[in-house]
Image 1: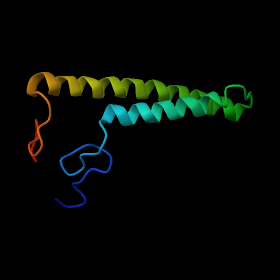
Image 2: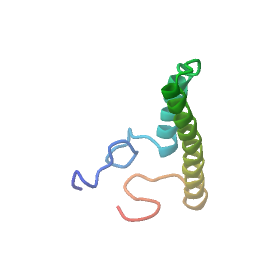
Image 3: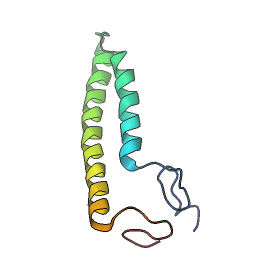
Image 4: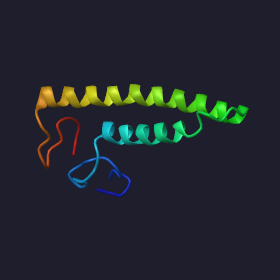
Amino acid sequence: MSDKEKTTFLVTDENPEGWKIEDILMTIQNDMFRRTQKIVGDSRDEARAVLNNNIEILGLLSQCIEKAKESTQILNRSFGPHKEGKPRIGVA
């Protein structure tokens, strides 16, 4: 497998210590939420714009997390747990 085909963050046979998509997104969401809390009291226009953007991004991340969880549930329900060396769908 070439470097172009390898994943950087996601769990694969080549990267067994990787993350599930929903776990990465939840970690990002948690970090953004903590950072966003720090600007809530800043009433400057720029801070309000960033706050509004962050709130929108947090909502979109929530939607993405739910989609990723749904995909994991579909795979688990239809094909069972991942078995090393063989993808549940697609090609290796």
